[in-house]
Length: 190
Ligand code: GRF
Image (tube, rainbow, N blue to C red):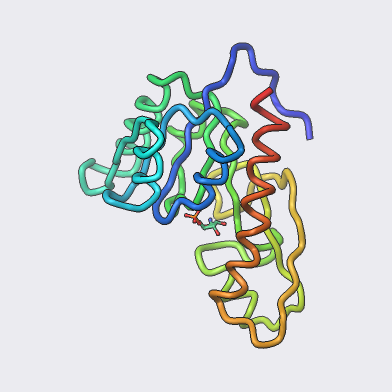
């Protein structure tokens, strides 16, 4: 996959909604994250950013007239830190075109399944319910759809007898925590 040439150094911004273990993996891999934005206040991911001195912003939908207005504000805030690449790391809202056009071809997401299989917010549950013997982790470009953007990298993870959502998700996350920093590092951060 050929990505648009960067014309200037790219700051990396991360979008989160929850636990932030993928954000932690990026930080541990020495990916230079310059700003972290969340749609939810008080989540652990924000605490992880604060702990290492990364500026944080909270953009709850209820503070704005609609999603377009919220996403425009979030894009503007990220841009003010020089962000040119956005990593969705457990960010649970779809991004509106007003956001995506600000960072063309430069918004990536990590998803806990082998896309196009099991898109959406219940990918691990859905893989278990389907009885597959293999699922995985995918890093992909973000478009307006639900996990429909071009796949950049993916890796399979076995589903083992007796797996629960928790045990399977934990096994997938081990892969995510390696794959996401690798892709960000290789494609964007050099
Ligand atoms: C990850 O499994 C990711 O694939 C999915 O949401 C989860 C976020 O986990 N989109 P965390 O917040 O990074 O711990």
